[in-house]
Image 1 (cartoon, protein in one colour):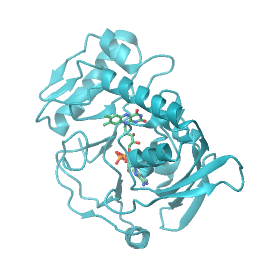
Image 2 (tube, rainbow, N blue to C red; image 1 turned 90 degrees about the vertical axis):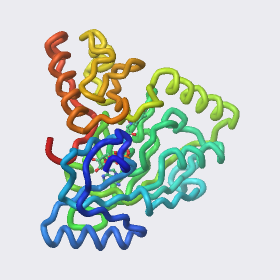
Image 3 (cartoon, helix red, strand yellow; image 1 turned 90 degrees about the horizontal axis):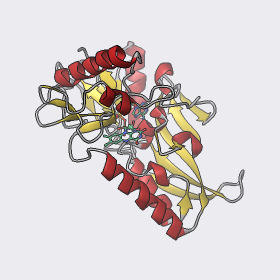
Amino acid sequence: MRRHTSFRAGGEAEYFFIPKTEEELITLIRRFSERGERFHILGNGTNLLVSDKGLRDPVLSLRGGLSELRFLGEDPDCPGSFLLFAEAGCLLSRLSDLAESLSLSGMEALRGIPGTVGGAVVMNAGAYGTEIRDILSRASLLDAAGEPVTLSAAELELSYRHSIVAERGYTVLSALFRLSKGDPEKIRARSEEFRRKRSEKQPLNLPSAGSTFQRPEGDFAGRLIEEAGLRGFRIGGAQVSEKHCGFIVNTGNATAAEIHALILEVIRRVKESSGVLLKPEVKMWGSF
Ligand SMILES: Cc1cc2nc3c(=O)[nH]c(=O)nc-3n(C[C@H](O)[C@H](O)[C@H](O)COP(=O)(O)OP(=O)(O)OC[C@H]3O[C@@H](n4cnc5c(N)ncnc54)[C@H](O)[C@@H]3O)c2cc1C
């Protein structure tokens, strides 16, 4: 799984499927559901830590197929707004590129989030004051039995890095985004500004899963980690980034066990120094 996750760590998946069409994905999910078998849905693996011991439950990777992207024109229900359709495996960056090329505004701040559309909906991904819920109209999903469901953004109950998708065992198939026309120069300038902020602040030269921890109420994980004296702290090849303490980075050959141990140690020390209990934002698969 090191080849499929941005942490570049993790053992082997025993079964790895890349469904090329929605029908193939539905067939697989229905088969697993009938047999009562669990499975993992993989997007671009940019918010994921997989155990070195690997995975016995099958992995369904949506990144290879299911990546159609289309401009649907003006929203008949909301004149002045325009709709973009994207399948779950489409990278968010392709969606941003298309929006920018059509002078559609609303997702400039999300530029640079390296996940897929599906992963972004599940996580209600967000940056610099914009979240997926601000631009999502509705999503098509499969329930745990492989039956189709369509849910509006409100029905998905999107909140800070959370939706009901995971707890209900749903799979996102595609999403419909609503954006408004904007001034092309302003859109380009805003996109560029957010891109610059990211490369100035984030350790983009090293493998990571972005912010390792959720933002605690009224504070920032990075600030608390720095205050606990953990800037640059390492366990094996895993390190609290020197550039941004909210990121744990793989400095070369970190194992998933080292990254996991560092996450636990950071949580322990921050609790000790500030009383705040950090929660990982990164999802963990397999046994640690
Ligand atoms: C350098 C860097 C910067 C980042 N910056 C940000 C940021 O600014 N803001 C932010 O919010 N995040 C950020 N992230 C984290 C990550 O990119 C987002 O959480 C992203 O939304 C994850 O998408 P993914 O496709 O990679 O999901 P994955 O990591 O593949 O999966 C994450 C979770 O979503 C589930 N999932 C994925 N696709 C589906 C689907 N179609 N149906 C059902 N479940 C699914 C998986 O099962 C898993 O539980 C950053 C990551 C990196 C490496």
